Figure 1 (cartoon, rainbow, N blue to C red):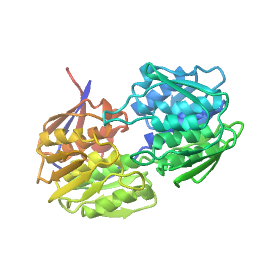
Figure 2 (spheres, rainbow, N blue to C red):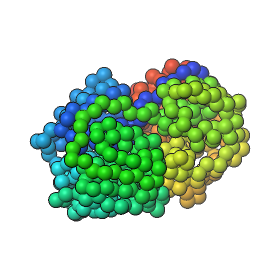
Figure 3 (spheres, rainbow, N blue to C red):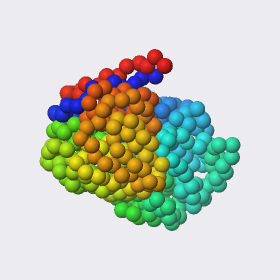
Length: 422
C-alpha cells in the first residue's frame, strides 16, 4: 500500500492545472446507458473512481475503451442488468446506473453502494424518485431490485433533511428522459455537475428545462442518441489548490477552472486576506502572510461546499486567530481533525462544529487518511508543516485527485510516493 512523504515548510509558487470533474464525469458515464448509440467523453481524469465506474459498465456488458483521456462507450442491447457487489461496494456513485437501467430496460438490480467513511448518506430520495416514476422497488439482502412496466412522468419533491440531493436529482433526471410524459423535480440540486449532466443529456436529445434552478422539468422522449462531450473542470480540485496556496503562504495560478463555480470559495479566501485575480479560465491566489480566521458553514451549492471543508480546516490551522466551521451536510465529516491535531493543530470538535485555534506552524508527523477529502487536507497540512509528514492509506486520494504529486512538484513541493512495507 502506497504512502506519501512530504517535506514541508516552504511557499509554493507557480501554475497548476485542474483536471475535469470526477463528480460530473461519473453520472455522465452512467448516462451513456440510456442509448445504444456510441458516446465519446473527452478529457476524462485518470482516477480510481473513474476506473471503478468503467469496470461497472463493462460488468453490465457495455463496450468501453479508455485511452488517452478519452472514453468511448457503446451500451448495446445484450446487457446484464445486475450491478455486482464487488464493484459497487468500492464507490457510492455506482448507484447512478439505477436510473438509466430502469429507464431503458425497465429493470435493475443494484447492490447498496460503498464509498468514503463520512457518515450515513441514505438513498431514500433515490428510491422515492423511482417509485414516483412508477417503479417497484424492493430492498433485500443488501441490494435494490427495481422493475417497472413503464416509467411515467410525475411531480417529485426531492429535497431532504439536509437540502437537495445531488445524487437523487441526477438519477431521477436520467430516468425521466425516457419516461412517458413530463417529470418535474422540485427541490432539485443546483450544483454545476447537475447542470453539466443535464446539458449532456440534452446533447443526446433529451428535453430538459430549468437546469441550474430548484425546479427541473424533463419531458420524456422515445430514444436518445449518442454524442461527444467534455465534462466541466473540477471545482473541488481548484479549491484544494487554493488551500495549498494559503497553507504554504505562496502564489498559485490555478488553470482550467470555472471562476463562477467558485464564488463562495473565493469570498472565503478574500475573508482570509488572500488576493484573488480572475481570468477567463483561471484564478491567481496570492497570500499575505498567515491567513485571517474565518467562520464557515457548509451548504448545498451555491453555498460553501462540504467537499472543501477538510481542506480549509487544514489551511486554517495556521490562521492568526480562532476559526469556526459548522458542517451541515455530513455531521461525521471531522475525522481529519484528529490527524491534524497529531501535527500540532489545535482543533476541538463539538457535534457538527469545529473550533480551530490557529498556530504559527505545524510539525510533520505520521498520519492516516480516513476519506478522500481528508487525504487532501493532510497533504495541505504536510506542505506547510516543518519537517517530514508521512501519510498512509492514500488510496483514498487516488479516487479523486489525478497526478497530485506531479502537479504539486511543479510548484516546488517536496512530495514523494513510496510503497509501504506494511
